[in-house]
Image 1: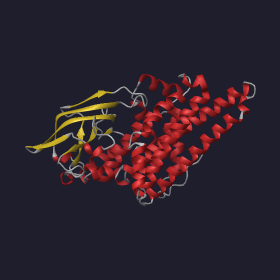
Image 2: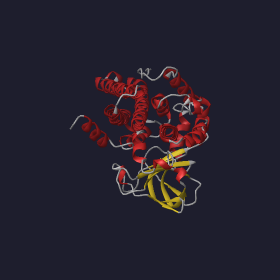
Image 3: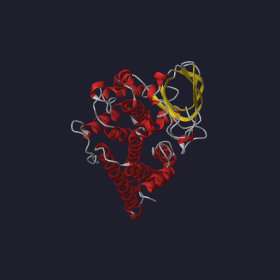
Image 4: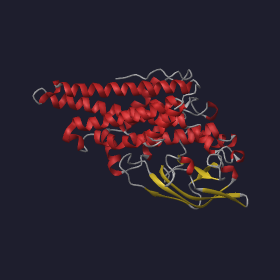
Length: 387
């Protein structure tokens, strides 16, 4: 058992209590067989999203005046971590809403948008997605070409997005568009209702995070008004700056998902080793196996402390781009390494669906890609170091 390193977020939000609440939810609502079935059937866990509302945590990072708990984004880290220990895809889709619904509206929404969306988000009534990545715009996200053209009092959005989580089941998709030639100062974020004519999605099959409803999104003259601009009409061409406000929270969320997956693998591998290896002529006493497990535990603990150190800085309002980028890439790469080691220690059993290490390995691979690849994070850290 481990404890959460002190994050230094504002008094009133007990992260130990949040962790215990989520852990109880997981044990009650997501037995291992259900988690495996969701993976095998590529099933979007909509019922679990509804049940998550019973925890009272949908408003974790929404201001109290809008019906939330008044926490900052880092207070959600135990949620991501505990959910990822059993069902990483649920952490992924819930994080999608907490970041790109709660956080983006709370930080960049107009007063009218906050009044309309935040109380509903706090009650778990809305599903949000975030559409930035395009077929030809990934790591260099500002290269987006999806256009929003103003015509006769409204905007027409035309283009395509790729790898958008929950795009087929969301109520609103925050869509980044090109509204001016400037690479960074010509991007506008629109709150696009998915029921709008011209909006469509196609489901993507993928290796991991089955059940996330990851889609290609198509916009064919999707008509929205200036009131759909995130932050209101005055925020035309300010989409890039609005997105940058989320990056620290996004990196911390993905680092926490990595911690949860890594912990799940470590727990399963230790249990397997204790049960199986001691029956085979004392192999459990073999130093190589014991040292491998110690290395896994040590590296995971280092990643956890780095992540929560960055969270402490973010919660205190201290500049921490360097630390959140370090945490994101180190935690994801560490969890990837741990997952591979777990599969190897389990041997032939590691390749069977009866054990979860193989699912963890498939899921964890995307965490070093999404939210900025490991290489992009290292570039960011290098710049922060003056290199």
